[in-house]
Amino acid sequence: MPRPPLRVVVVDDQAIVREGLVGLLGLVGGIEVVGVAADGQEVVEVVGQLRGIDGLDVVLMDLRMPVMGGVQATATITAQWPDVAVLVLTTYRDDESIVGALAAGARGYLTKDVTAEELAHALAVVHSGGFVLGRDVRIPPAPRAMGGNRPTASVDPVVDRGADAVAGSLTARERDVLVRIAAGRTNAEIAAELFIGTATVKTHINNLFAKLDVRDRPGAMVWAYERNIGRW
Image 1 (cartoon, rainbow, N blue to C red):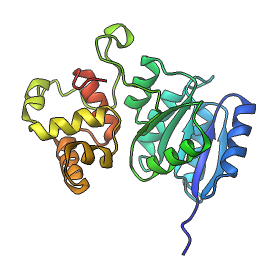
Image 2: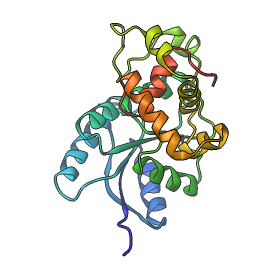
Image 3: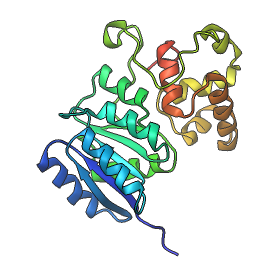
Image 4: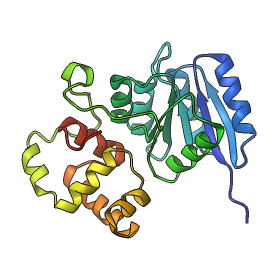
């Protein structure tokens, strides 16, 4: 039985870019563009409508748009419809944009010089629950990003739990996995680098999420970013 197509909404404030992405994705097998939006407010409305009809899998999100930007729209969508993945596609790779999008719950971040093949692969990855960073996207070290200011994250600040206590509760292997999550590695890449099985990686990740009190990879990345854990 053939797999149903991946249902995608394309968001960009430039009509020519929207039309180009729709046309490009239409040539890729297994993907169906079910909606478009020109700004963050419009995409929130579109997602709400589609969720009530036939469903939706991934939002391909631009960042800097009028009315409502992509970061705010991402935060709204991931909070209201957590099963809908958001993949950022933008021209910007500055620290504030990257950290803001990840803190809002985006499962991936690409720049607009990706190929059609890379874009299709990234859509499939985030839909399956994975995380992806573009080849030219790097999470910034905390002291440099945004003048040293911390981003507003979608994870609890864990002030009452004590960041040092939480970090200290991590095993050496969990810390190894966290550093690699923060660097954007996939489960398979982590397994290969640490010479362990993917099932073991998943176990470590589940334990990490529980200890850090986060729900997903972007949350873990922001947690690590805020505490300058790992080298990017």
